[in-house]
Image (cartoon, protein in one colour):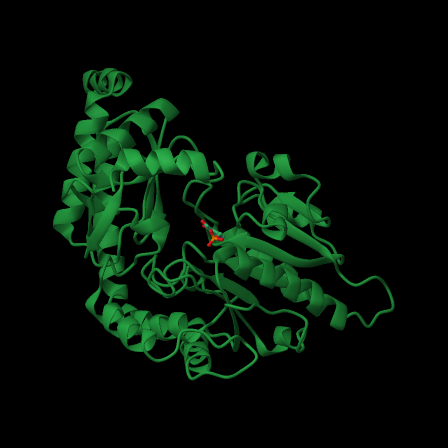
Length: 413
Ligand SMILES: Cc1ncc(COP(=O)(O)O)c(C=O)c1O
């Protein structure tokens, strides 16, 4: 089937939710994808942080084929062999005690919000209204369902669907004073991404996260971290919060967990899990045998890749900073591990750079208008980073505004 045929059919048959790039991918292997015309692309986006092991990884293929022939789905009315095993591995690497499995990031986040309210109700023994307020951060992104949208601090996602779930207030990003001002005994949870992803790759500050931990510990509220994009090895540690030396009450994960199959999870402590009982929350598909057995395989592979992610992340960051010193159009370089971004001074330039790289067979994306985001598979090598940085250099130099600014910088040196 040709790209034109697919575009025509989708335009007629699908809800117009996506503004897709005009590329029809037909296969992938390792860090490369191929389109319907046989053109090869270097994948520095990995399906928005999902394909951490690249495409068609031999170990994932093997376990998928084996399990598909054995058992794909049972529902959560019965036991299968792999949920407890996967929970054992996730609790070990996170330092938490219990897991709940679902199908996507937004579902994991919904589960976390529900658990926070349920826990507050169970622990409400002072005769007043149970803690109910959720403090979330401005500029955040937690998904597209109603609870997730209600805690997403970006008007463009929220406004068309208002009114949203009540009881949410937004704190200015990394503003400790604002957090102190808005926090009181009615707050049941502070909810945030350890590194904001869709919001432009912005790590929360040590001071802010520590304050959030202290306030919640003192009042009996929960600290919920969304590591759907930044967790599971993306920053060179299993979880981004492990860089900060704190532990949350709940953490959510999804994207790379089952190497491309839909699987999300929330992980929590024994204490908080006491807020749940059978029938209070659930899912038909979540945590099925196929997705779980693949996730176990993914975690096995991940163990040997953390050091590599960390080293290559430092190498990539160093090159992006060099690029910044050359191109005045780059306002900031941000991120950790292999979750990196450059923030440009113009949305048009960012758009043009993404198109130019796509033309040259390199996949990256643009978020928050001006931010070029890099979420490559964990299996990349230095030479792939060199290739992307050289392509960025050429693309930035060829932008009319970029070239002018670059000259100005050179003259002023
Ligand atoms: C931090 C974060 N939370 C939640 C989500 C929602 O995940 P999903 O699209 O799987 O529902 C995303 C998706 O990009 C995300 O980056």
